[in-house]
Image 1 (spheres, rainbow, N blue to C red):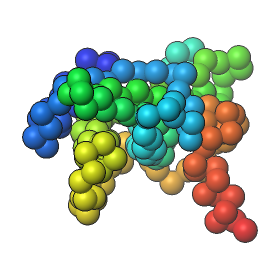
Image 2: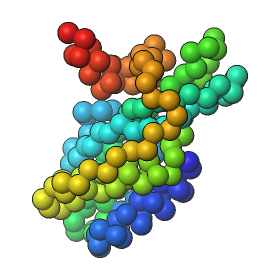
Image 3: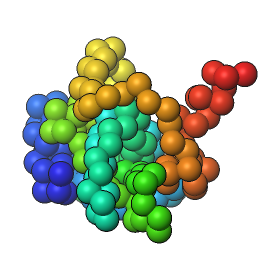
Image 4: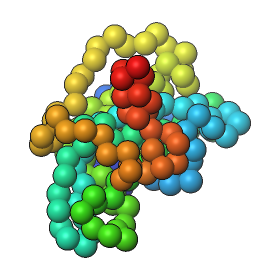
Length: 170
């Protein structure tokens, strides 16, 4: 989904939560997990998504695509900004393939941005955490192994799934 769709859902979610400050959201592939700039807060989530190879057109699902959010509120200006990095994957069949962008179902963008706004309320407005847990909707077969060799987050050393699987095997 394009940034416009993310913006629309984000704006709706901000409004539903009665946040009066003006917030914006941008995709930013330069942000680094666990290293937000001074004054910025972080939220990391995993979500269901699909990928499609731009070379062979193969489509595959992933049950935990890593999404990193860095957020900041400026109280004086009554505004905030969220930077989003969606980690990519590459096709395991093609040689010299591209890292492909995740394709999230609209329902999962709604859940993901709902979780983000809940974190904004806690981290930027000092509200109590909301205890409701809205699950993501599976997008295809989800029982396959994690393909670390084709995961951008693994290659960069940030993948939470690789860490989880290594811990579970010990």
